[in-house]
Image (cartoon, rainbow, N blue to C red):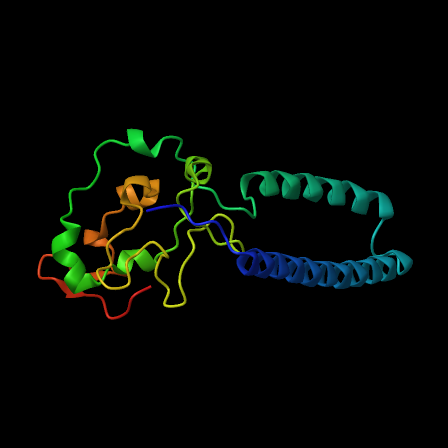
Length: 185
């Protein structure tokens, strides 16, 4: 499948979403900051809080928060370095069960790796970097609408290569008897 460049409308939608989220975040942050400052000023003025103790605790909590931001980035990336080197992949005859499950797995959230981004074969959602882009029906954009086959099978992300639906209760109530779960994700 040939790689499709994003359209100007898609890029503008992504940028519009980003700027909207940034503005909302800044407004929320300003409100929290003003509320916190008013609370601290009131408590200091009332003698309930000693400013020096407050500063020590503030710095300690800031250090913890900065560390947490380093380990939980807003941008989600799969950490797999080489999806082609993955071993012991599940052996599932997807072609035989897709008519039953309708490729429900193609509706799950999939985060791409740096390798996926570098290959530029898999479309990602500009509003949710770096999740695989989905259509309005919730399916991955690379899932054929009629057959549900994967249009980027050779380049599929690591999670798609290693995913085993057999025990996933979001997909199957009973895999062996081919009884689907009540609702797809």
